[in-house]
Image (cartoon, rainbow, N blue to C red; front, side, top):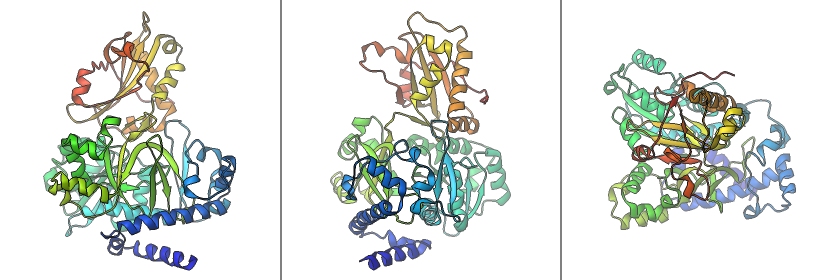
Length: 511
């Protein structure tokens, strides 16, 4: 049996090295087989991890778990597992390989960078998923020119996009720099399919720049880091031919799942049909339209825990630093195609069914379970506001509570508003100065936020509002049992909420 599994891994590895042969691995009609093999593969990877990864053995021992039965394994996450053991102990064999490893990092909301190590097999796997998600949308008679406008340096997404796509395209890593991108496209001309990768707000701002005749260029926008509304997608589609997203996490891999024509059509249908939304989603429970992706169940085993969070196991046995039942604290669930298609047929949605090419399962994602919000690719938790307030003597004495308000304005831009409610009868000597101190403290503590503000599109810098007691966005707080620390609103909701963005925050962060 071991020889058969080894031959299976070898066959998958060989087929995955070419875009043409990789398509065979995703051929329709084999969804049930991929699902079954993925679970068997995950079980074998668990057994291998227990045998060969010292940190995971210690983790299970702490939890009092002596079995490798998948259903009995505890969840892991950054706090319970990653932060508690050094990288070599989390690696296969208890050591970091000397060659072939790429290290990238994320700082998340803690301000302390976390390094992630990736070996050659997992980097190749990311390249294969990005091919499926992005490069197959190129016009057949045009070469592909990738412009990587994600943040560069050691940041996980930008670094991995460049590494993944270098061998299969012409690529220039500009970072989020409009001038460089426009100058590059002028210099190389309109004979390419330009795949521009970045966060949605940057892509929107770039394609609004009138210095380039966008109609003369074939442009595919590929986004990650945060979701996109269908309104913003339509806005970008005025000048781009396609707008496609991917789902991933630096904790895991940058491209676990991708949007397809089918998932986009399905999401639009769900947005327009409350009955379809009730049949397929938990939109009523979470209050947001889910992002919808497709993923390969042979490569990723994705579960939902009792709290509605996604728990991911990378089934690939060759990963340097394995992830077993890893909780990234995103809310979501998985739907099999066999469950979705009958609903669509009963609803008469033939136009959606016509878009189906891949029979891969669906991943529906509703945002973060820790109530953080995304801003230009940065994760901003409400606790970041709390900590900044607590560290400021004037604010901690005067502020009753706080709220993050993420909303889309009438221009389609995603905005972030930091709302502070003053305690009854309290005032601030200089609200503008206090607001700037607050944001500066948050930027110092959260390097991702600092970078997001520094590279964000004009007009999308976070704003800070200081509200007297029980006014504005806090007007109804007295009737609530618990504080609400996050609001996610559309343009109508933002106008109705009484937002008062008194202070725009253009000042640079002072380290």
